[in-house]
Length: 186
Image (cartoon, rainbow, N blue to C red; front, side, top):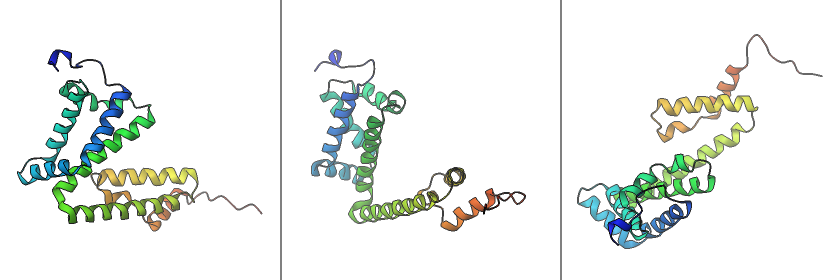
């Protein structure tokens, strides 16, 4: 296909993005792709260079100028911010790319260990959220605000995304003014 026929303007449609996400997901699960990215890591190349090259190949297959398509990918969260389904698919696409890079960089054992750690973290987060639901909405907001500041202060390290039951209780306790305690109605 001649360069003059490639899409270079406008934006990528929802259908084009969906195709790109699906095709990329299929390709990165293939053994030859995994080998290609591992070979790049072994050659001291960035694994994201390989994933980007694959995205460019898909865009060319679709009749889209690769640099234009990649620029559109960088704007998906603004262009389609109100399309919840597409945004979920986009973040899954980004997560799949990160996982492919991690798998190549860490090797089978390191990657399995990372997945196990992430699973454990997600379980802890779920337990924390279940515990938080026992509190009043205003208390939940205060807890989430504290969690936001904590993760921000820790430069968004995943371990900072957890509060213990004791920390949650302390946040709630501090919210209650010592001068005003609602009395229990009999």
